[in-house]
Amino acid sequence: MSPPDQAGAGARSAPSMLDLVRLSPRLLFPPGGEALYRQIAVLTAMQPGLEVLAVGCGRAVTLEYFAREYGVQASGIEPDGALVESAVDRIRAAELGDRVQVQQAPADQLPYRDEIFDVVVGELEMTATADAADAVRELVRVTRPGGSVVLVQLVWLAPVEAPRRRLLGDHLGVRPRMLVEWRRLLLDAGVEDLHIEDWTDPDTAFRPNDVKPFPDFAELFSLSEKIGILRRAWRRWGWTGVRTVLTREREIHQLLTRDRVLGLDLIKGTKAAASDPGPASPSHERAEAQALVPEANLDAGDPRSVEAAPPTPPDDEPTSGEVADVPDDDRGDTRGLPLFSPEAT
Image 1 (cartoon, one colour):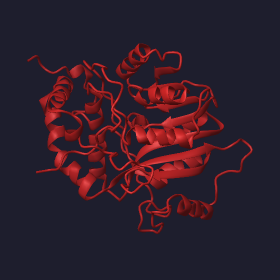
Image 2 (tube, rainbow, N blue to C red):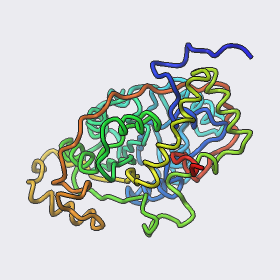
Image 3 (cartoon, rainbow, N blue to C red):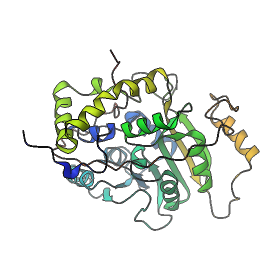
Image 4 (spheres, rainbow, N blue to C red):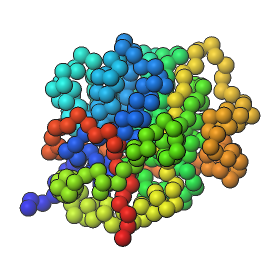
């Protein structure tokens, strides 16, 4: 075998789960699968003629879905140039070039003028390379007044000490935040009428029982696919990097399953008109939170509470991985990208 190609390894010494999924030969919906993105379309009343933007769109699986199923004009932003090239080739082959456009840009510096999109979606990968606060401000800036701003993001369900938070963030390739932090970022940016859905809860009525928001890596990929993914990862990070991502699986599995510290939330709001009043008062926000998140105990001991402990400062963001030798044979897998590891033995 030839030695690993370290030129594309980036600053990190080991791949994240997001990196590994991007090296998959199959196209995958983000966590939540097609059912979650169908719910986004329903909540935002997608229909032909609307302008829709997805930030952190990867290989444009969700953009293709919105364009095919709802007839919208779909635009996508992805900071990884290799993913952009893959997405453009796919869209051209699918003869959707007149309805779907994808370009390379950072999530916190969108190349659009103010107030031109009817619906803007901040996908999970939005925080892979950008600060969440800056990215949210950009999402709101390019949304028309009265338009919809949607976040599909990972949420801490319980306090996690900084070292384990960094470990999990590095493993996933994105940076989760507390729900109260995501709400505050949206409210401060001028988004109102927040609607929140917890897609981690198996009893959630709008999530099909057979859809897992975090499918196991072992369940989703065949043995030959996993070998191919790890071989591509070896070319970029070497055996040390591949061994690192495999050996930390046990602790990651404990955090995600036994400790249940991570959830997946859909947060949808409306950009306020310029003449609308400013942010709501704290008392109003608490009443709103009780209405929006009825399953949470909004007291000082609940991490979802508006009055919970102050949010921790964000960690340094990891850089995005590249894609190499990845064929685009399938339209997509509706089960969603894997974030849980298999049961530890």
